[in-house]
Length: 76
Image (tube, rainbow, N blue to C red):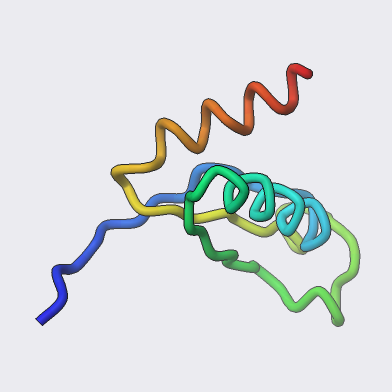
């Protein structure tokens, strides 16, 4: 039986496009992630009061590394 992994949200994007860019960045460093949307992008293609936000979620043990990668990319 596979061991359960704890997951955490490490980034909240302003829409699916930004979230997919972050997800691709993490994948390029070997960090698996998935996206959790708070509303359907096809219904709400905008962000108002959290609607349209998308969380980027990773395994808890890779969270600090993932946050650092995102920060370094944004600082670039």
